[in-house]
Image 1 (cartoon, helix red, strand yellow):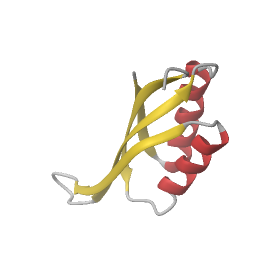
Image 2 (cartoon, rainbow, N blue to C red):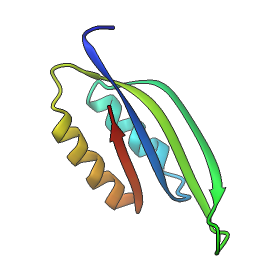
Image 3 (cartoon, helix red, strand yellow):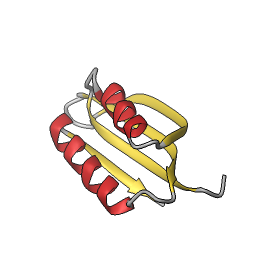
Length: 88
């Protein structure tokens, strides 16, 4: 709809049970709609460590501040030990 802006979230990091829950809860609190989300596990090239990958399309309400969302996501990423990128 036209009252929201579409963004993409890309997340990658060590596999962590809580990632989806924490992210979903945060987005819900901000009234951000998850349009679609897919997750998969890949393996780090050298160590073979499982890496969790998440790709989501989201709709951010127009009156939300994208900068503050970006900042919040950075904090969440640090807490979870993952990388989160928000792209328009």
